[in-house]
Image 1: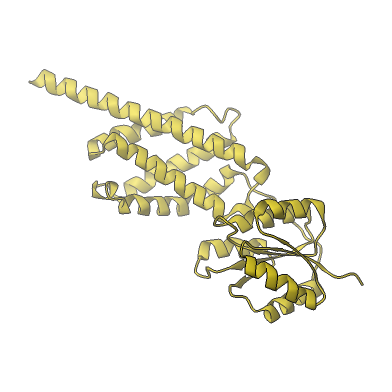
Image 2 (image 1 turned 180 degrees about the vertical axis):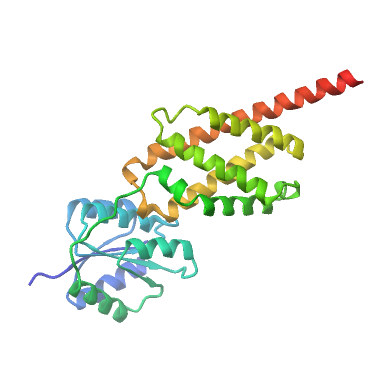
Amino acid sequence: MPANRVLFVDDEPSLRLTFPAILGMHGFEVRSAATVAQALTEITTRSFDILISDLNIGQPGDGFTVVSAMRRTQPDCINFILTGFPAFESALAAIQSQVDDFLIKPAQIGELVELIQEKLRTRHPSCPSVPMRLSKLLRDYVEEIREITVGKMKSDPALGLICISDEERGGELHALLLEMANQLDSPAPDQLTGTAIELSRQHGAKRLASGYRISMLVTDAVILEGVVYDMVRQRLLLLDTSNLVIDLKRFNNSLDAQLRESVQAFWDQAARQRSADSGAG
């Protein structure tokens, strides 16, 4: 019987020396990769029975990219993730739903070998889930994105001083995110809808009344963008990676266009107030 083929992916040189050698002693045929690019080359040129990948290869969450590629290219491969961050609950939730198992570093070789052998014994044909587009991610996780974004806005040194209720911020974000999802699904995703324009202009006018400066409008957009990108990174295994780049580009274009509308409404409202004050004087 041919040896089970393992792809081991980790950016730590010491682990790439010890893990493959010990796995080889247990009858596995092991190839190693130190980067995502090397791993993708291996996946597209060779077949594997088992993938063991670190969660963070160079950059946080890079392991998601490797597992995603393996699942799409070799759906019957058994996938394991190594992570040194057991408290990273949101990432682990995504991991557990999309890989066969995960191990916390420093992993014990004996435990890993037993786990691999158990999964090989019980392996059955994979039924990969339908990957989601970014628009669905925004809809499915709108409440989580809203809560995280509001929290980051409150903790910002400048935004945190502005008296705006969580309900107001959260309501605006909820409506904006759902409209962005609708826009991504529209036949003309790069053109703002009337609803998106109206929401953006309301945001700019309201923030002037709240005591915002223009730079704070930009900070709002930057915080929201960062939260969405973190959500994408943590749930990369769930996403349609073949369309992800264009979806993210459209998301950024939409966010930039909405920021311009907010800034314009801010200036228009400020001009009206100056005119009113001048007339009253």
